[in-house]
Each structure stands twice: as C-alpha cells, then as structure tokens.
Length: 252
Image (spheres, rainbow, N blue to C red):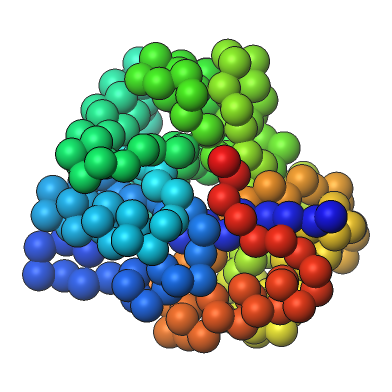
C-alpha cells in the first residue's frame, strides 16, 4: 500500500497583507506548516491558522524561516550555525505556545525557503537546526528535502524525519530543487505536476530537468497555497492520489 502526507505552507499573511488560500485549501491537506513571524506571519495570524488547522484535523508544524519579511525568507543570509539554532528554537517555541493554548499538539518542524535550501546542503546548518528541534521536543518530526543533509542530520540526532518532495518544482540531477530564479523552476501544468507526484510515491523516482530519472523518497508532498490555481490544484491532486490507490494521511 502506498501512502503519502500532503502538506501546505500556511499562515503567511502579515498584518493587512493576505497571502494564500489557507481556509479553502485546508480540507484537502493533511499537514500544515505555519509561519512563525520571521519570513511571514504575525501573532494574530499564527493563532487563527492554528485554530483553523485544528478544526480541520490537520497535523500542525512550525515553519521557521530567516528574518527577512521583505524577501519572504527566500534570500540567503550569511548566518552561523549558532544563529540558526537560536532562530529555530525561538520560532518553534512561539508556535508551540499557540498550539498548546488551543489544546492541540505539534507534529513537525519544516524550515522555510532559503533556510530550508541552505540546510539541504550545509551540514553545519542542518546539524544546528536538527539539534534545535530535538532540544525543544525530541518527539517532533523534522521535514526536509528528500535525501538531503537536513534529514540525515535529523536521523543522526535521533529525530523522526520525513523526506519531502515537491509537486510544483523541477529537480536537478543531484536531487536538489531547481532555483526559483531559473525559468523552468516551477511546474505550472496541473497534469504534469500530478503525474510527477504519483511517480515519486509509487516508483520512487523523479525525472530531472536534465532528462534522467533520480531516486527519491516521498513521505510527504508539499503543495503551495499562494499560486493562482492553488485551490484547484490541491483538489485535483488529492482526488487523483486517492483514485490511484494512494492513501493520503498525516505522518503520525
């Protein structure tokens, strides 16, 4: 039996700025990664998103990012491992407070944007992030790019990990995501994205931008809630996965 978690980044609105179709997409995903105020989000948004996630039965995770609101956490910053540790503890702790106050339980931590991509290849950063998660709560699951340094660091420190794949991103031959600044980074065709996910889950491979299949482990698949057709894609992907016989459920 094939199974996969469907996760979506949420709570990325800020003040008067609204980003993403969070409420509409919630019924179709099984896990949510909630921004913690550094790259996006604010206390009120965090509280509201936690409440909505609990109401829909979605597993909750913290989505810590770099302190870069203007760049939405997608610009690399020259941070030390110690700074990465401090940032992750601070943000995970903030969301943990809202989850506990709402009577819920936090499932996982998934770094955001540039922090996620930096940790995928930088072992010092990935070790610091994994240690931060472990020190806050060793029962948390660490989400990281499939096969990356981040999941290896999590495994070595004793955390449960989830290898993450992306529905709407293309891959390079080394298993990394194609940088967003490149024209072919995003998959905009719904059918192509759905077929990519089904193949990653069932066959354990993905076709790289260079035209070769690479091995990949798909424990959880990320969809994005801020695209023009995000809601339709979430509905379509969930339906197609289930029609294909793939069980969609959270990691726990």
